[in-house]
Amino acid sequence: MHKKGFIFDLDGVIVDTAKYHFLAWKKLASSLDIDFTEEENEQLKGVSRVRSLEKILSWGNKTISEDKFKKLMSDKNEDYLSYIAKMDESEILPDVPKILDYLIVNSQPIALGSASKNARIILERVDLKKKFDAIVDGNDVSKAKPDPEVFLIAAKLLDIEPKNCIVFEDSVAGVTAANTANMISIGIGSEDVLGHADYIFKDFTEISEEFLQKLINN
Ligand code: BG6
Ligand code: MG
Image 1 (cartoon, rainbow, N blue to C red):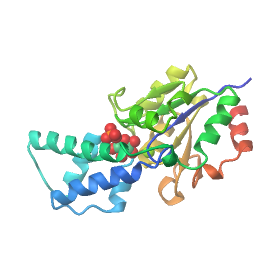
Image 2: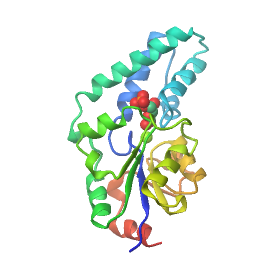
Image 3: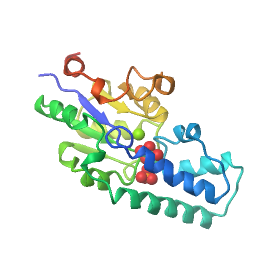
């Protein structure tokens, strides 16, 4: 029996939380009189909380004190958590449970590889935590995506060599991280944004069992 390591990003891949990150950053940017576009938001996907705020400040040409920086980070997270608190299973993206169950039935190890420090709470809220053999999140890494650290730790926990791991990602930084880790990258989203992925699908409804079987057997 072939075993591959299947590693999933969380935000924008398993659950539709990317929109909540966007709303929370947009509110923060407006409070600083910084214009924040959807294109800029694309560059924040997969990027850590600290790095995201640094980028927004640099786009708006703002410098702030360390204390103010900490306050803004905590305000953003509080705002984000208020959205998360209302989440339930209906916010799992289409066909995600079906894909996870197919991999489980076929005895394939599954890990989460997320930049978010809120990953565990979210998986619990949508009742998917039990489907994962390993969870690596923003609390476990010292280097954020596009650094491959998060996926390399996940591979180690699954005890699968990086070249036998497959990563599902919706972000530019995450696909780069998977490629750098020498893993197979599967972009979930649009070709314009994720052109550097090995395979691209609009969402999981486009991924067939035959395709998964091919990944397992190759
Ligand atoms: C990533 C998101 O998964 O997690 C980013 O794509 C987010 O938008 C990052 O900034 C960190 O998340 P959190 O929950 O720790 O602020
Ligand atoms: Mg993501």
